[in-house]
Amino acid sequence: MTLLIKRGVARKLDSVRRSVAFGLLALLTSFTLSLQPAMGQGIRLKDLVDFGGVRGNDLVGYGLVVGLDGTGDGLRNAPFTEEIMTSILERMGVNVTGEQFRPKNVAAVIVTAALPPFARTGSRIDVTISAIGDAESLLGGTLVMTPLTAADGDVYAVAQGTIVAGGVTAGGDAAEVTEGVPTSGIISSGARVEREVAFDFESLTQLRLALREADFTTAARIERAINRDLGGELARMTDAGTVIVDVARARRASPAHLISELENIEVAPERRARVVVDQKSGTIVMGADVRISQVAVSQNNLTLQVEEAPIAVQPNPFSPGETVIVPRTGAGLREEPGPGLSIVRGGTTLSEVIAGLNALGVSSRDMIDILQTIKAAGALHAELVVR
Image (tube, rainbow, N blue to C red; front, side, top):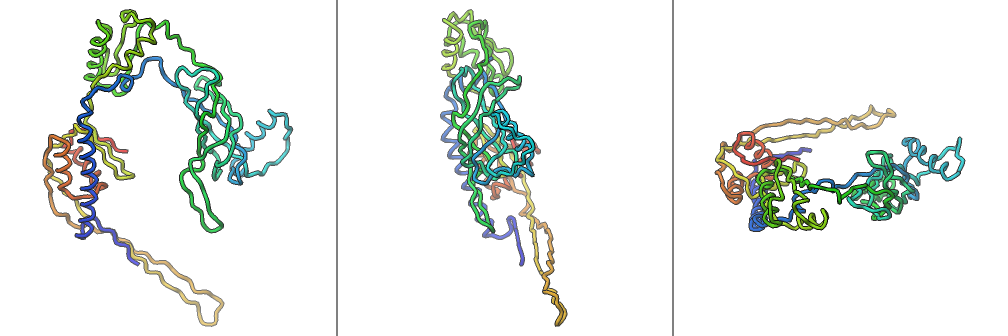
């Protein structure tokens, strides 16, 4: 049995790969060009900055999920599950000293949540549950009351409820199929806030606007937009990521009223030229400001050949032995010369850049390697983000 993998050798394979690459990049071109008019429009300030002091907090806790249909932890492999279960039962007044548990309907889990800013006592938040043992699925389980703490060690919320798992597992004795991730799930509004994060808004004398993507040009535009719309020299840019607003000069009823006005001021942000590639899926996304200089590219073709030639070894006549299959595998890697240097024409617009890359006629995965090499050569004038 021979497995032959060729990249860019057979004409038919070249045609298919070119069609795929052309289709992907053409779709990217039409999608990005359709967005270009919107890129020059203003974006609300609330979508560009975070207001100093207005932030959420992460919460975490560990607990126990019960009611699983035989898909829980094996206590022999996850002894901490038994410790958690013993602790919970003892808090309920059940004496379990010296008892041995062997159920498969419980699982130890980590519970996480995000406490939003201005969350008040009694409000509810969503929680995420993830198995930490060898449980097969959390489907249909119920999380027992679990305290959630912040980095300071204080309890800010308590979670409990029925889990909605993120996947499902089904199978029999010889086969099993899993869709999604059944060992994690969520409980919508599954935690109740028990402690508020204190923050005195009324005492603020200035507001600090932190840009989510630091840029001097964007910060300067925010400063000008605030001073223009609110009247007076209220805003001051301190660096690429911070703009300070004087609350006293604004003369609003309260800092909260001032923020409500600031949130709706529109600013056209300066966008960085960026190319984002995902090596796992082969996805390539380019911004409209990406530029490329003329460059020559050469790529060799690799041929991987794996050959399986098993041998059947027969036993001696009338002996009690059995026929044995002995595997034999041969593998080799051969590099074939490519078509030579190809010129990628320089482009000043996104459509010209994509047209130049399309001329190479390679797949999207090969395109990722080529983009990295072009960036290393200094011909790609954009930030390259590889994931």
